[in-house]
Length: 234
Image (cartoon, rainbow, N blue to C red):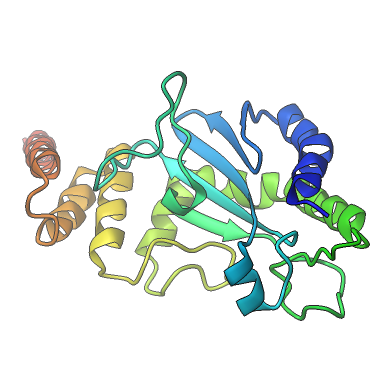
């Protein structure tokens, strides 16, 4: 069996469904959708021979990863993957919020539910693709739509716990960490909460000292917050 057989099944069975749901850009194992200022990412992760052996799977097996990239949050270092033409295509691991799907049926070959085991005889391939496809359809409302809401994202970032207590989303770090402060500040800025934005961007700046854009954004937020407070107190 060749891994291209799995990629072919993904292209034939899953990509048409995602295309109907608004995804417009595709590679062999990745899909992107653009909703306002948010990029939705679907990634079918494959495993090289080293990782496959370490995990106890085949190189034909796969995981399904989800990502949300907010254009309101500038990249701290460089830019997300930018094609020569068209909008950016960030990798799932570059996304601000990340999640994954879990297999809904048991497989004797593997206890982990975040991987679909595919053997060399393709015995599980059709069922695995159908299972992943069904869950991607469900995740459109339960994951992508839910966390694309900036207010919901800000509430998540302000929570006192590491990642989401339900385990549905991760990628934004510990409370008080530089990256979480950075993302919280820019989400608050996008929601025009200048006081909160200034507070968290200032915290982030103690780590990202050389970031001139961040310094300028803090100054802008502070100035606008001051003007708003002055108008309110007149």
